[in-house]
Image (cartoon, rainbow, N blue to C red; front, side):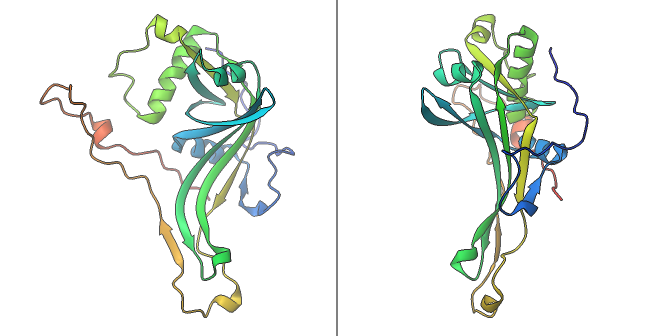
Length: 230
């Protein structure tokens, strides 16, 4: 499997596209923060231009080291465009809470997000291709890959894998309470944060699963990886 060069520093070098202009203090350029958000998220949104028109698609993904992998059908023109080198902007957002201020103007949300810019390339190495498919499954449900039938040769040929370097990226994070104007602090209005978390429900078996077949522990105890951000 081909691997990217190891980063020389623990932080990304801000570029004109990744440097935060507004509320710059919420910006994070260290790799640990960016990687933690990517690893916790489930869906990324990929924006690009094709045939002179803007497009944005949501899709599953996985990170392996300094690469972000996406996969889709070889018949999908979106993924063909990305594989052919279309410039893309990829975002991942985690919503942590609703911030209710004393004034309508200062309502907000607590969030963690990553913005990544780059040019994709088609994965042609068969081992890297399979490793990427495994990584996407494991990113969504850790432990699942070992239990299921792996992709056949025909299924692999019908699946296009595109990778993007995680090199031009930044994170933006908001935490904490409302930021109200001083003159509004005496208003008789409740203010604070409504925390939001992903709460898995009870696994529901497919009707064709044999009776008595218990769900695996990674389904009954499903959790996303959580990482604190300073």
